[in-house]
Amino acid sequence: MPDGTPQEAALKRTTHLCVSAHQDDIEIMAYHGIAECFGLPDRWFSGVVVTNGAGSPRSGIYGHYTDDEMQSIRRQEQRTAAYVGGYACMLQLGYPSSAVKDPKSETVIADLLAIFQAAKPEVVYLTTSPTSTRPTSAPAARAGRAAPLPPQDRPKKIYGCEVWRDLDWLSDDVKQCLPASKYPNIAARSWASSTRR
Image 1 (cartoon, one colour):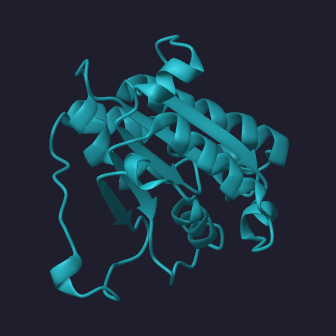
Image 2 (cartoon, one colour):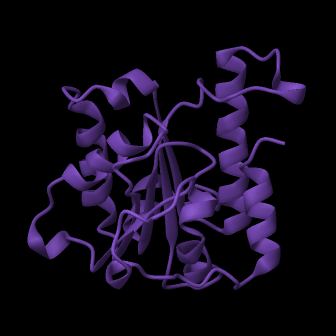
């Protein structure tokens, strides 16, 4: 919780929520939500990262880092991005990719359901592409969509987002361009904080 608010209260004030598979996805796919909430007392953005970052690709200064070291770095990068973006809450569930990819695993869905029930967000951002080449992205999105909520607690809007590929598999009439030009200084700092250099 970047501003020190207790977790329960931070989640309860959430109006915009992003569920992503990886630490570097949120600031790309849901910048619209970050900007919609930034600095406003009645709008709050929260992020959820499902995986632990152990499988991050390595090059440059990270070329010889262990899985444990990469997990620590990725957690800190995401916390820094949450601080810069003024998030209400940044939850990192820390699941290994194998747990997210396992279609029989109920734990990811149970955790996401608990988060949705506590936050009751108005707007949700999820990775959407069933053709994603990133093996944890599609299962994380399925888990987010599978978290069953009673009608009164369901978000008013759910945006299916794509981070690394296109949306050519969707017809144009269901695509929506979300503005992402507000606060370019915050966008640059948030994205740089959460992306390996």
